[in-house]
Image: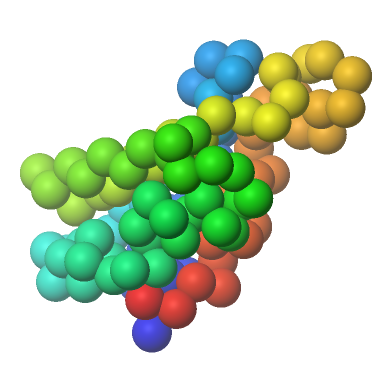
Length: 100
């Protein structure tokens, strides 16, 4: 099952100038539990997907809302030369095809 098939919301945004935040929200507890237990959403898997050191990735489960927040340190500070997405709004693309 793909993440895009079970998540109601998959989005990215800045969480300050040096951090990208990804929000994953699920319709129900069963899909949330399946996702949070999947190795595809582990720190290591997200680090590989985005080409960053695992120490730069944090995964925050929020079971009350059937949601997962993922934060990664940006490779380039938002708005500086080399930044391709100052708002961080287009960085969730690689998550769409994840197999859980």
